[in-house]
Length: 244
Length: 262
Image (cartoon, rainbow over all chains, first blue to last red):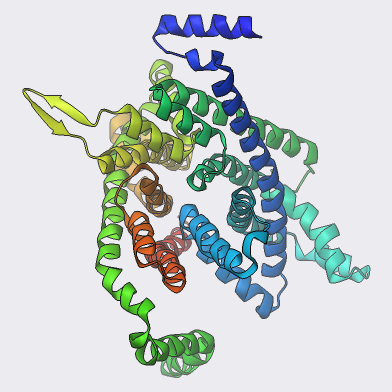
């Protein structure tokens, strides 16, 4: 392992890039920790945003104004304000109020706040995609299902969502790639993700360019993996006549 | 008949928006009666010019970024349409790299990699932070504009190309007088959408030390140091961005609906 690293450092030094920091155990450790944090952040927010998206889409398409109106307002506000401002509103305002209310027993860490905010933010985008998918389900299918005595919850869960998922999959994957990139915002409230770890390293030793190339390729790899999983799911879930 | 329907519409209007109107009325009453005495609203009033100046900085960054991004993006998009594979390749790489990089990382990139002053002749010209952030936002904007441009051209039915060629137009003539005029219409909604997204992206400028609206809000909340004020100032950030971006998004939806069948 270290032999390969030394070879890599030697080779990049030939191109004029100083990757000496990967040989330093402490700096390499903090980068690896940051990469792990970003991965965890991505996994949690992907699951959270999909749950939030399904919930919001269910509210939107419920046909009850007292459910659909608040969901619509939430989605419009979320889509038209910056993620960073939402994060600050949650972490600096809600977290402060929570700490004042319960004292040091506040259970929510900055990591948890980032997961909550990004999940809800991307959930709003998922909800729009899923809503379009749910509305694209032919009304004949719905009538057939309800004539078989499906309740409205069963109708949503067993008929509408499986079909809506197929319609919405391309835009859901697009949103998820956006979500992976968005996790870099976590560094703004000192969650130790890979961006934060890189900032910590480059403030000590002046090697911004090398770290930037590293981070960009890391995020490129993550989005590539999400893209591949999306392609696989699209091929796997393909039903002739539904979706693309 | 027409008169009747318009009368019906004016009667229906306040009934449809009764919740919003009530909310507006309550806010106005609250502002008139209770707000002037509280220290929170005094502080907000005192800080509002600074907030407005900060938001002006955000809008300036977004406008320059979309201008620069559109210019670059059209160049890259034109390259991507070239019949020569050798010229398409750099355009493809440009689009792939800048669409797949996180904006925050690109902003850090331009802020730390570019020098803080440029040597021109014998003098040093300062290279301010906000210009670097603008370039950092213009790069992903250009990649997105290139994709919008390419998509718009590709969405013109190929029969139009064939019909134009059969009328002995040259490739340049087909572009200038047949394809491009239709493309502008199709590009407008996604381009406006991109502008709204970039405006929201300018919020990231505060992280690299540009004195924008979020930086101002943080300074204000630390200076005044009242719980109520902190809540109000961060909410007013939300309101400011929402008030700027929501009309753009509504207009985009209207345009999309109007151009949907062309």
